[in-house]
Image (cartoon, rainbow, N blue to C red):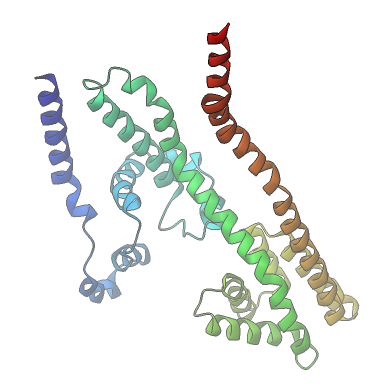
Length: 301
């Protein structure tokens, strides 16, 4: 009877939650985007972007409501983490991220409470999954930020290799613009560095200094190499020295750094394999071979 009661309670709670939040979870129709001309930017983006992960669609409605009721959560998550993950803080605010952390942890605890009648120690054993659910949103953003940074660092040497010959025939600003446009068109917008450089060129078109705009891009994406490159290019232009030589030295340094990173990553493979062998195969060897031999030896005594 306790099992049937727990199952009935779970079904009732699940049905109530779906009745409350299913309209917010439903995928918006593409035809509704016609009305987006009169909507604010953040509402338009939420309307037309329907390919979000399922977990995000589940957490977003609750997190948004909690963030609106508790604006003090805004300072609990660094806004720079959201920007470096490639998201817009106007669409996904820090308060919503922290609210998602709370909702995920509380959701796991509720599931564990529902399982407590079936498994007595479910709540105690589930504290670790609840803590993992609490950390998941920020860890996900951090992983996205690290992947974006690694991709930008991989793309930077190739970008400089294309800009350098063009800078000998035209101005550096024009070379940056032409290269960024060509790469962006060739990659169908998948080249992150080209997109970031296009933003810097757009800022230059409004009167900003190109090198300062590149430094802003470097600060936003936590790219120290790009920041150093922008400073070196600005200094070379100010002193009248060779800009192509500066880019060639920067390209060579970036490729050397990438090579060192790859060698460092390769050097960690052997210790990881040794840890796998020691953690998996050694216990099996002890249980299947050594322990039976030891027991048989004791049986002969």
